[in-house]
Length: 33
Image 1 (tube, rainbow, N blue to C red):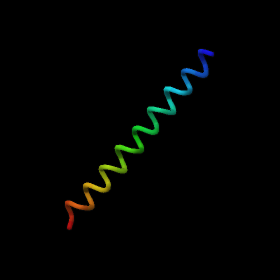
Image 2: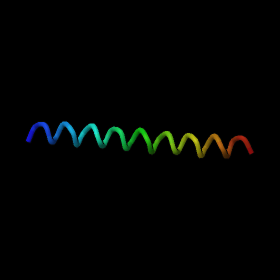
Image 3: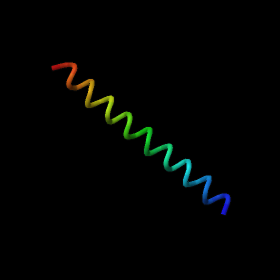
Image 4: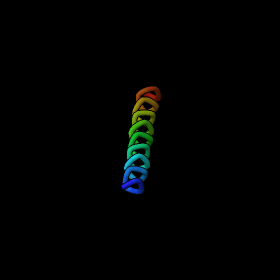
């Protein structure tokens, strides 16, 4: 059960990172225009 929670937290962190990077890309794209 502990392993599963650890995996879940890592997955959530990865998703948050990807989302923030996507947001940065989008904002950078808008700033360029």
